[in-house]
Length: 165
Image (cartoon, rainbow, N blue to C red; front, side):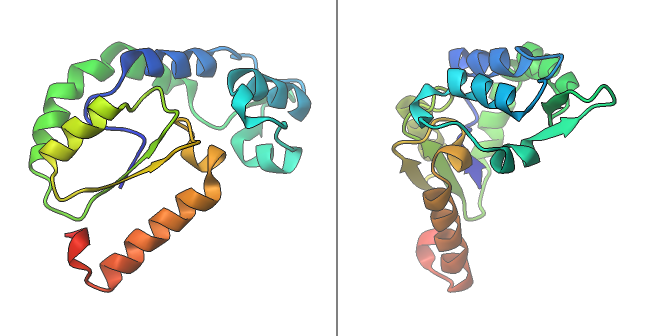
C-alpha cells in the first residue's frame, strides 16, 4: 500500500512539505500555537484541530515545548538525497507482483496525475483510489474515506478477489 507517494514525485510539493516540517524547530508553546501553524499551512481544512486530535502528533520536550513526533534528523536526507533514489524506485516498481493499493489525494502536491499514470504503467495490477478533497495528508484530510478504502482492499484480499491481484 502506498499512501500519496509514487516512485517519482513532484519535487515542489515535497519541498513545500519539508518547509513546513522545518518551520518550527523550537516547537510550540501550546496546542493552540501548533493548531495555528497547521491552519496556516492547510487553510482548506477550515476549523482548527483540537488538542485531542493534536496530542498524538506532538511530544513535550524537556523544556516543556511541544514538538512534532517525527525526527527532524530525517529531513536532511529526504531533501538532499530523495530524488537520487527515484530511478531505483522506478525499477523496483516494475518488479512488484503483490496486490498493491495506491491512495492519493486529489489536492496533493506530491503525487500528480502524471506520477499516478507512470506508476500504474509500471504496476498495471495496482488499484488506485483518489480521495478528491485530500492533500498529501490523506488520513488528516479524509480519514473516514481513507480508512474505508483500506478496509475494502484488505477485505478483497481476504476474499481472494482477483481484482486485488
